[in-house]
Amino acid sequence: MPGMKLPGNFFLVGLMGAGKTTIGRTLARATDHAFYDSDHEIESRTGVKIPIIFEVEGESGFRERETAMIAELSSLKDVVLATGGGAVLSTENRACLRARGTVIYLRANVDDLYQRTMHDRNRPLLQTANPRERLRELFEVRDPLYREVADLVVDTSRQTVQHLSQYLLHELELKANHAHR
Image 1 (cartoon, rainbow, N blue to C red):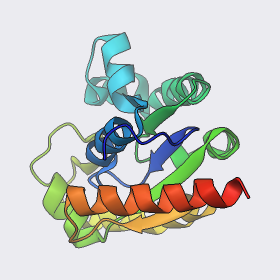
Image 2: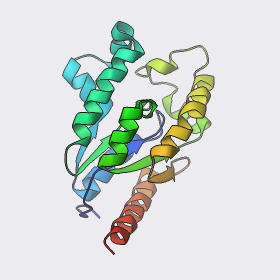
Image 3: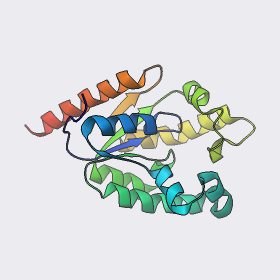
Image 4: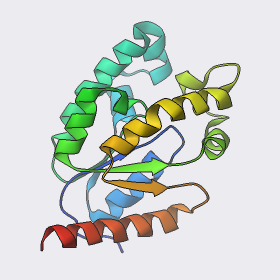
């Protein structure tokens, strides 16, 4: 179903490994929207990978860059934006996302997230002795924030990208049709 016209912005939130970039690209193609990934945009503009930014500027330095990037990208029209897993930690980011588009929380359980991220060295928060435990801690802190900001919560565990994308398009279409009544 490429090219379905669904107006507005769609912002994807969720923990690392939830599928924000993969689903985001598919959703953007299907709705004829531009796709952005805030982490990739930060990397392309700084010219360095996120672990380096964490190393040099600390997590707080990275979060400042992330907030500026989300403010900029969310102000564009008809975009799909995959945010970094920790973007919701900022009150400013949550308000910005809520005000400027439909927020979709891609939720997965900790075991699935661990399976999807365990070989990825580009995730500074998981460079620890027990990454699964770290994911569990992140999930406990962030899950309520994702839920707070989300217009739609979608479970990504055990679903194919194809099935998830079709489900998401269906839900967004229903939401758009309902809004026009």
